[in-house]
Amino acid sequence: MSRIVVVSNRVAVPQRSGVTAGGLAVAVNAALKDKGGIWFGWSGRICPEPSEIPEVTRKAGITYAVVDLKAEDHQEYYNGFANRVLWPVLHYRVDLSEFFRSDLSGYIRVNRMFADHLEKIIRPDDILWIHDYHMMPLAKYLRERGHKNRIGFFLHIPMPPSDIVQALPQHGETVGALAYYDLVGFQTEGDRDNFAHYLETRGGQMTPDGTGVDIGGRRVRLGTFPVGIETAAFARRARHASRAAFVKSFRDSLVGKKLIIGVDRLDYSKGIPNRLEAYEHFLKTRPDWHERVTFVQITPKSRTDVPEYQEMDRYVSHKAGQINGAYSDVSWTPLRYVNRTYSRSALAGFYRAAHVAMVTPLRDGMNLVAKEYVAAQDPADPGVLILSQFAGAAAEMGTGALIVNPHDTEGMANALRRALEMPLAERRERYARMMQVLEARDIDRWAADYLAALAPETATVERRGVSLPRAAIRSVVRLPGAWRSDLVPRGV
Image (cartoon, rainbow, N blue to C red; front, side):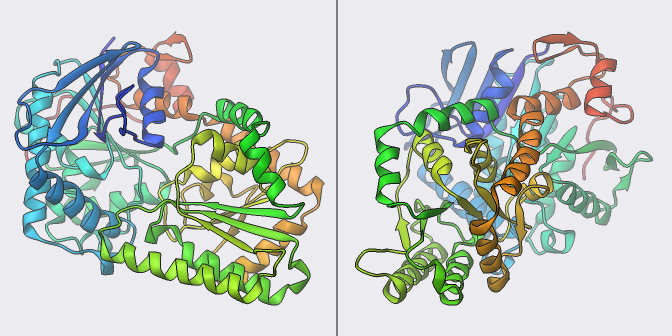
């Protein structure tokens, strides 16, 4: 079988302190844990003279290959173009992007450097799976070097409509370069369709079966693969965490009050100010809930050197103080605003204790907090998920969550009241519907489906421990049409 090479900006090398990749680490492990393979990317270190060869670590059948970056490379590629341009534009916030040609040059330079390093370790029959917006043009640079491997890309964040993408200077060098992949995967059908329309504006033509686009002399397949979680494992984690002394102490501190929880990195895409304003409106219009509820907003700070994040931090801190100043009593603090990071086990325990979770981003590719909250619930007495219509998770969880518009302050306040007052029978029914989705589409299924779609037509793909021919896989993941693996890029 072909070897799998996963490429991402950060690599979670085991036993290396300070290296984390969040949910991406879980996703990559799902892809590599059974078959093994290579995980390649940035080490997280900055040094004056990086090594010319990747640093290799092997553990549990997985080879970790990492490279260091220079300070200039990190500033321009990561802090600059990836996070000050691509991140806001792809989250529909063109107004917050700050474009410098030097940053784009750094982004291209680092991606070419990654291609140079990959060239030293990949074999002709390797299957490459590239992750996220940091490495959009990587396949283009590998193709330029003559590599004809199957190369797939998965975008973990949103893909906006073509007119927003075209507001990105020199978008053809970044988003347009995704046409050099054999398969580009998205979280939702809307994201996939937005990218298809963008390629059409660049001269691409949809395939007759509607599953790809012919452009620049090659065919790129497009697919929807909603990221899942380790559903069963996270549910077990939550059960165990609920018995931990730390979580018991947290529950005791509530003194019988109902708990609303929000967990988000401090980012303008998460809609935290809107959420606090909705909670403030709820307290203003529903005095009968005073001293009966506590809202805990856990928000680790990120990108603290970026002005937009500093301004949002000031606003959220001010709003939290304003709410507590207006409504708290000596025996009750309506809002706890916490700027620190907790372990996954602690969060699982907090989720299980919460009667309501508010997951209300202004725009999100998926949002795994929504899925983790549901998986953590006690089936006998589950909580209620309030979910933004602009989170990718809404496409799967809409049958059980209360779907809201995060720009509608009064609507979110009404949903909060409904969630707190929802009868047990309705809560159980909604929880059961969402869990059915989470169990059917867990992280292992996500990785298996994507790799099945990316693998060559003649390959045999192992799925859930059973080796199946390609024809059998087709019926499971609904692969349409035939692959065009004979085509090589001739420009976009």
